[in-house]
Amino acid sequence: MNKTENTTLFSTHKNPYEFNGEAIDYQLVNENIKYDKYFYVESYGCAMNFADSEVVASILEQNGFGGTKNIEIADLILINTCSIREKAELTIRKRLTEFRRLKQANPGLLVGVLGCMAERLKAQLLEEEKLVDLVVGPDAYRTLPDLIADAGTGQKAVNVLLSRDETYGDIAPVRLDNNGISAFVSIMRGCNNMCSFCVVPFTRGRERSRDAFSILAECKDLVEKGYKEVVLLGQNVDSYYWNNPETNTTTTFAMLLEQVAQINPSLRVRFSTSHPKDITDEVLHIIASYDNICKNIHLPVQSGSTRMLQLMNRTYTREWYMAKIDRIRELLPTCSISSDIIAGFCTETEDDHQDTISLMQYANYDLSYMYYYSERPGTLAARRYEDDIDLATKKRRLQEIVDIQWTLSNESNKRDVGGVFEVLIEGNSKRNEAEWMGRSSQNKVVVFPKGDFKNKKGDYVKVKIHNFTKGTLLGDIIL
Ligand code: SAH
Ligand code: SF4
Ligand code: F3S
Image (cartoon, rainbow, N blue to C red; front, top):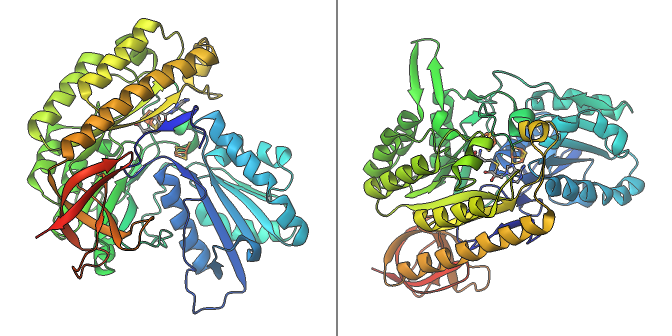
């Protein structure tokens, strides 16, 4: 990860955005079956892309492809891409060049670009990247088998049609993350918000919510398979709104959250991302009422200056956002709060930047994902405003907010020392097999010795925190 372009502090939290290819660690879809053809898939960008790759894996498996994590034996390489910042696209262009060697060794190999960059660049991508055979947008994955067949005959295959109703609700995703404890569940697609800096409404299309019954069925199925945590995903989960055509009744996000929480008290429920304008008191009350709904809200502010927020088209002011933070603290005193912040958006002054710093301090974020502004072609900001903050200033301001967040995160971890947290064990600690790694409800990583306790992956344990390192709370099991 490029530290200056895109800085995440304290990896104590599950990161909803930054899948960087290597995050894929998947098993053979079914190691007992011998397939004629194998696909390999890499995901970049946000968790929604990762979840989409799981849908793609399911579609391919039903069409005779096996999954492999060994790129050398793949007949089809898919790269699920992100366009959120220029750097994200450059990373993918570079990765594509690395496939050249594989293509030379295996002339029958097909390379497909999926996701947001496919949608943004469409057929242009085929002209620019000669080794690409398929370009498939986020709403066109059902047509992958036909497109692969076309590409197999030497034609270039493109489908970037966006849909108003595709949710892949009926497709049971193949879980690519083999920890078997936590799973992403997509509850909606697209975004109607039109934040002026953001490319997502163009790459993902109109917002639509998935059938609530299919979401509940997927969560129940995960519980039966031994999963202990679901992360409900959408660009703006709080505007989830599903109308049942048979009964003409609607399900809101608060209702859905409650129904998922009621499936099983030992299933943890997380969700991401909340737009500050849409998170309601009702949702906060539901979070408070259920122990298994995690006390962690990702509430991206983007800027602390009302003038910037207006230019960004975020539809709230600094004061309105602060009141929202107050409300969360009042109703959910143990809740951790994280944010996304953009430094150096068009016309940002030093005063605007100071407003962001003071807002971060007011909100007392446990964690933030921080970026400097990257102009994206076709967005409202690219059309209306000049990208007038020079790179050195953007980087300096980013570094300043990174430093502030470092202090806030450090203080947050310090406050946890001496406290006892319920931790869901996710597996061995990376550094030491004699230690477990898990997460608290607040989404912080906790590492602790296994000792003589006969615990296993997926168990809940109470851990008392005695120390912390940069990204990890350290503790001991207590009974
Ligand atoms: N739907 C989420 C955000 C998804 S994109 C939400 O609204 O909160 C993740 C983050 O990337 C955004 O919150 C924003 O901070 C950042 N981002 C989006 N477009 C950007 C751009 N053009 N330049 C820099 N950062 C950007
Ligand atoms: Fe982008 Fe705004 Fe939609 Fe988030 S809410 S995806 S930042 S347009
Ligand atoms: Fe996600 Fe990147 Fe697309 S953040 S929605 S993969 S542009």
